[in-house]
Length: 256
Image (cartoon, rainbow, N blue to C red):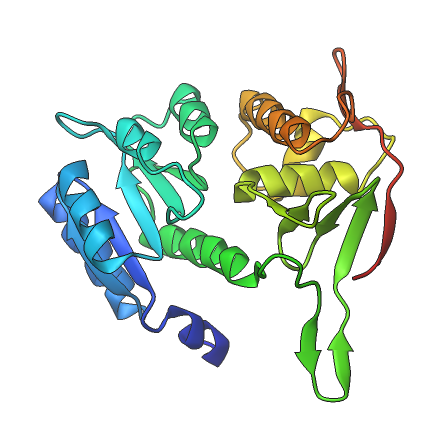
């Protein structure tokens, strides 16, 4: 394992929520061997108690649990300070994936999943979170000056690619999930060009991503609502019937 990966994993707290004792133990043991500090919960009630007590950096949350299920539990976590959530489900249908993404999950894996794939997804989500900066901070210090950031601008808004953050006209960050950010970045990086759903999936998640087209529509709808609430004019993401989506604004690129 590379040194930078060890540095990221060390003392990082992962909370595993699953009613299956064997799955909790398996995931916890595997993540612990890879440098994470793990805690486990059998249900959402225990999850919330542990969140209040120890503030995990990420939650691995099962969907199918007796009583309160994972999707209901996820809805209770939707605020700006909530840890990112990766959903696990034995059902694994497109509908479950869409609902999970719609209410704020960062990623979604079908059970049984390869523990190494889960580990990779966890590191990806944490890495993106780590790169995000405080509001208004657009450059990183270094000896002798600043390291410039890659920023895409449209109107008064700016998309800081390195920090995985969208800033509105008043320099406040607009809350986006990782999936929403990747889709918006794909659109902004290809302005005034129609992108199909397959192209958006390839640009945003890579060619090996799960190809469930409706998740693109769901996340585009969420992005539009957030942009509109932040003052971006309607129609900046245009639907092209039977084709896909187009980002209509003029985009400029430069350092922060």
